[in-house]
Image 1 (spheres, rainbow, N blue to C red):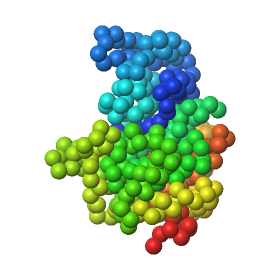
Image 2: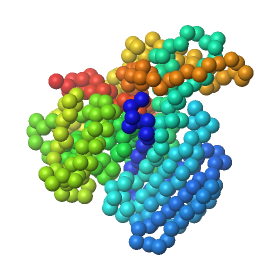
Image 3: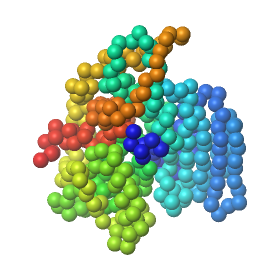
Image 4: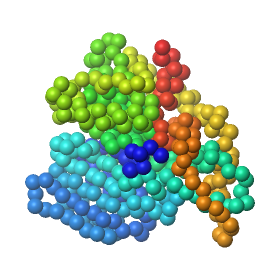
Length: 392
């Protein structure tokens, strides 16, 4: 498995207004904490001597203790267990930042982070001896389906734990910061009509250097105006693989310290368009403006039409679903089994090349785009733009 991925798991981000911030934090925590589970919580406020730290306390006590102490400059961090398919529970950490703290350190309002891939992506599985001959592709598809569903559950637990629309947009990515949405592995939108935000935010990040954590709260009109302000014919390079996204992330950190590229405003990471890397694909100003101007239903329809599993995935999906039932849903106690390595290069490559895309219309009127964290959303967006006749 890629070394960068073996060290840490995906991160989840959400944008919400100041007035909704603590309520969004409390609702997400309530949705995600393992039933009856205990939490470790810390709250600090820069410039203040007040500091709260409690270990192994129930959910109600966490919320009751932090609500009155949370200020505009505060930071809350809660470590807790959540439901998981591979294990009885798995540890996550939920951070909430007050508006002043977020503005000063560009931390984003809400963030969930994981500590490693182990547990999220199993390295070994027990498979019954009586099973059919092994299929690496079916094993990889089975792991992909379960992992992607877990990722969706966490992102929706963060962004849409109930019917109240506190969170405007959110994202999940296997890199260390909130990337351009088209380079993430999942995005959430409280209003399906604002799905073009993914393209506009991506343009602002790649072309203008905006930090996505800061720009995520801009209105659609403001995003349209910012894209329109770019020179006619301007284009940027979009990373189509997670490795390239990670490489761009490293280069952006270098740019923030470079005399020639470092930003002149606090909501940016650089002041020049991002350098292209080998393999990056074109996204133009005109494509983004066209997507922003078209009826949202047309754009969503093109995304749905593009989210079609390829032939390699369809060929192994039935066997993968059988493995889900045999290993996860209805395992037989006492049945002879053997241990199978499922984190080989062949497994990972199959996931990277063939894991499908999902476009989910949500009961609350929102929309979720998702794939496995080993992929990015750009191929889905690229195909949708082609369906709309916007790709040259």
